[in-house]
Image (cartoon, rainbow, N blue to C red; front, top):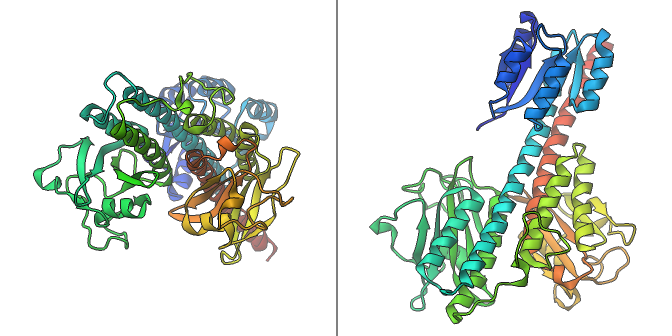
Length: 503
């Protein structure tokens, strides 16, 4: 839908147009309304994210407009405009959930910053809502795949392959998806199923293992995310995709144990290029599809994994034991908790608390790189009143260092047995080795830090669960960083204004 728009509601033409001009000069899209009734009619536009609402209107009082707006669009951020005589109504609006208020006459910079803060929190909630919806689709897709694989006609047939590519399209919102499987002969990937387009004859050519994006992903057992293939330096010889609407795509290898099976590919997402969240969800699907296809290839009988037993509409975290379904439910719980927060420190705390309580993990921590990436500094933590994590960690050392340097996942019920384990890095402050889950925090294609948790139960040291948590926490950190950047800009402008007045 593009960037969110701002609705300005004021019966005085001078103020309406002055606000429109100030916000427009800041690059923001504005709609105007001169009355409460007109404003309520415009609320049906899903592009609206923020309402700048004057309390004094000719037909309805601003408080009544605010109440009705919140009933129809609880996601909206509302900035109240008022005269100094309206303080009682301002307080009532804030009590009811108004985002901010500004007193007339308005200061342009103050107005712009208030609206930008409101837009930032609207984008935050929209992002979490979108991730939550995709997690719901992921749960349904996984359950559907295993139900089909375990049915009376179980096996690696065309119907199951078609179901796989449709599941990828549903979860990622991708217009075109494909499943390529590795043959048993010369080591070539061949198209087994597609969704969203008919593959031309010249598109059915096999891809050799280690060649092309799909072949490289499977040979390295690493997923690949491309935001714009024409500008991606990793593939200088690859032209923009013929027959596709987007130059962005994601590829995840299908690997079960030591067996390479194939790859899943997705492109043409309807609302923009593929991002790190898409890749994390594709990796979860690939992990399960690889297990499904591996078992389908060796036996006609496929037992549904315990983790994907009958799912309730809103799964209880304690009722779904381990694995991907429990992880999906946990991410939904994180989304719900984080959506209710605005202040950056509380956003990360809310996310880690959900992880800690669901997994009985203490501590659960998030670290970001500092000092030219020479060390990781603890940014947030939930300790549950028990063990705390270390304040600083060396990079390039231990399992944690491996995650930070490689962008991979580590999940182990006995990390001390891993040759990469470093006791002074991969344990909490008390030095006790526990089950260990660690994943990267990604922002704009770069790894900025790591999260890690020490779950009480060995079943929770799951790579699939770690992938989901990496996606959720990366989304939280991205929003925190964007919010902090905005606040820093506000503080710098405020300081400049103070300096100008004192000069």
